[in-house]
Length: 269
Image (cartoon, rainbow, N blue to C red; front, side, top):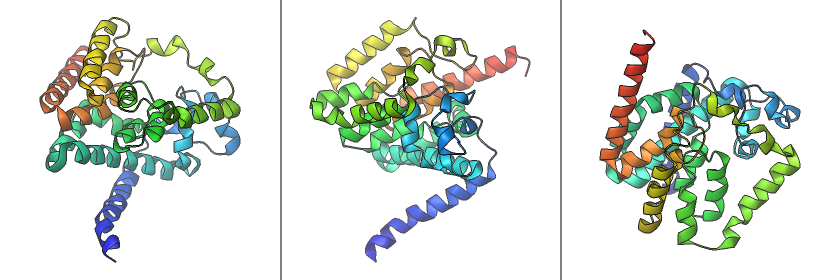
């Protein structure tokens, strides 16, 4: 009974969060992941707005549920994983890290879009590298640099076997899916990647992360090295910064709101 009592607050929080998630409107991005059948799951690129890694569906069983239920579960996971990461890295001040993250434009945008950023962020809750690598790879364009530090800490090739298995399984199910990851994404309006102009900065941050063996710094290098990402995908990075490097997180919070206000003024909003 002691074990049940210790977990009861978490179960209660999950139920409350799910109820809250049901009240919110449908996330803009969730329809790109919600599928109605296994047949549709085999052709995700037929969905106009889907451009992600198809093997992310291995972590999305709720994508096969009713779209409203799946939307609520996914939103709850986004919020719960952010809170869990903050508690893991920030300790007793985790609520401050969550507040900084979720009141930023990026955090608010994640709630509105309800994408699957909880998947790579959950890798920071897992000590087993063999599980962390596939999670980071399911949406690699903001946090994947952390995998380099993981491998430095444990340069064991066998830890890559689950990732290789996931990639092989994805080819069996979806064929040459990488052909659908076209360069057209670099020109879309939501792409905030400073690619390729900031590659030198990203390389320097990654080198500094390698020397200091800091997986959060390595994650910070990733947005400078990838060709596209949406603003909400910085939310996972933001909570990591808010938990470990709070001044940097506050700067990012201020820059995010400054950019949003300037952009709104230019559009006459």
